[in-house]
Image (cartoon, rainbow, N blue to C red):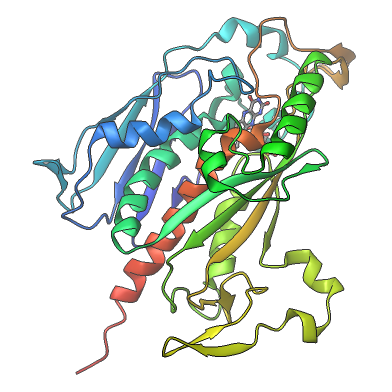
Length: 358
Ligand SMILES: Cc1cc2nc3c(=O)[nH]c(=O)nc-3n(C[C@H](O)[C@H](O)[C@H](O)COP(=O)(O)O)c2cc1C
């Protein structure tokens, strides 16, 4: 199975299955001298971990062990191995779906391609893999923070309920990373209702990057929005990516969409930010703003029609006690932040290689 690596200069290779011994990644290209500890990474991992209200009831501790690449609490420049043990998995719940095609999940395509599928928890297709991305992203975030770059993801919508006011203080307290206290109440109601019905619901994660310098990204195939889209659409259940006005730009006039330039405090800057912080594939220095749409969780308790591996039509529903997210977008928030950090870290390190010839 190819394509387990992401990034060029700051490169992760993830490994592990949902119900295997552990998941993790090897991180290559990390600059030396970044102070980091497993405790710091664990704090970030906690935000993604299942076992909180409104997400999957699987109670993973999600504790990382850093096996290499650190000395005296600092990165050394050597490869970093991040290991997260799988502890609270129950493979018995997956026996019932061992020999049938799961609607909306990945076993049909894996079987077409590889002829073998680890059905326990979805194997490699499980979003458990994203824990490794979050762990590596925590190191990237630390590096970017020292440069003044802050990445904040939040829930913009769950189903048709949309956050309209943005209060980041509330987002930090919200069990679903929602920055709008009024919308949050309706979102929680909706999640509770779909859960009672044995169903699931989709959602949109928004991400804002403040303090980003102008000049990240390369103008042709490595446009910063292309790298971000690639990163975000590599996430399980991701179905859409928009930057700045996104699809809404198609409904606007140039006179509305153009961000006019102004001179402010001795600096030329844009008066508005419909572009989402990118022009010509390169960051403008304005905040980057993008959104990622996640489909409703495919694992639902409602009865669905499918076929087994012999081609017989069967009615299928999840066994009682199975643990799944009613809305994957919620736990995707820290994962979106992590992937954004990996993209920006890579772009910063890439710029350091662009030295003029003497
Ligand atoms: C953070 C996160 C948590 C997820 N949790 C679940 C889950 O509990 N149950 C499930 O069926 N899918 C879950 N998914 C989605 C599946 O992993 C995904 O739908 C599956 O691998 C098929 O891939 P695709 O939807 O990208 O086509 C989750 C996705 C993310 C990002």
